[in-house]
Length: 114
Ligand code: HEC
Image (cartoon, rainbow, N blue to C red; front, side, top):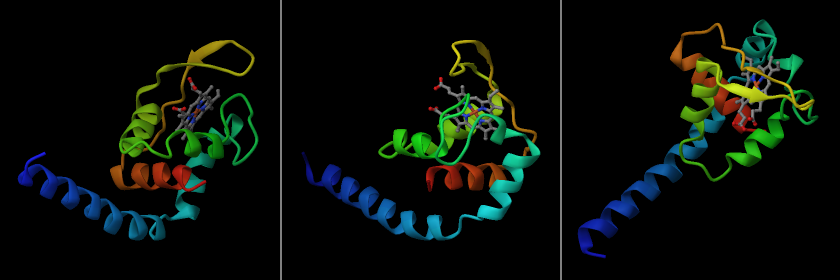
């Protein structure tokens, strides 16, 4: 590894550390919950119980070490990929009725905070 590469790695790592804590502190839980409610996400996702869809805890765990978690979750919420429900049937995932990127980010971070 040359010096430039290691410098970059250290830079990215410390950015991530600095970024992680304030980002979490800023999560607006009330706004996220309101968005979940308005889009009936709770029909399939509960905080810690598996319903038709995985619990929020399970989703957070799955993405624990994924640096792209936020954008992947936003894609899941905005593009309606085909998902398999717990009973084995398939349907298109709910597309969230929200376009504001800050609100979508907040919801993704709130889900990840479980
Ligand atoms: C009809 C049931 C249903 C509804 C309503 C629903 N989901 Fe899902 N959701 C699922 C299922 C099933 C999966 C699992 C996908 C998989 O693992 O293949 C999933 C996966 C997800 C994931 C990603 C999990 C992963 O492992 O990648 C997120 C995030 C998510 N849902 C958020 C939401 C949000 C936010 C809403 C409301 C806008 C919502 N869901 C509404 C059934 C639902």
